Length: 111
Image 1 (cartoon, rainbow, N blue to C red):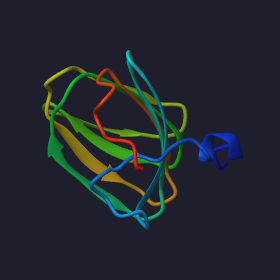
Image 2 (cartoon, one colour):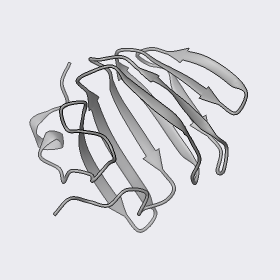
Image 3 (cartoon, rainbow, N blue to C red):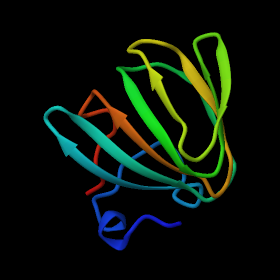
């Protein structure tokens, strides 16, 4: 299931991954950032940390390591990453994820 056209038309994020790997759509407020992510190819997400993040898998499968725990998440599963906790993983092609970041400027919006 693709995100609806009105979501796909939201502004795009300037993320450090090629557009042929991940497509983005975003809503930002002073309180946080909501990103709709579509992964077109398998992607390895290197270990990193930042402010708190919550996400849910809409379609596909992701394997995340959060701190010292690794889990596989599938449609309907959600995850919570506390602020400052190192995390990374593998995201399968075809996955769609909604991620919510406590930092409204986690990623810049593309011009």
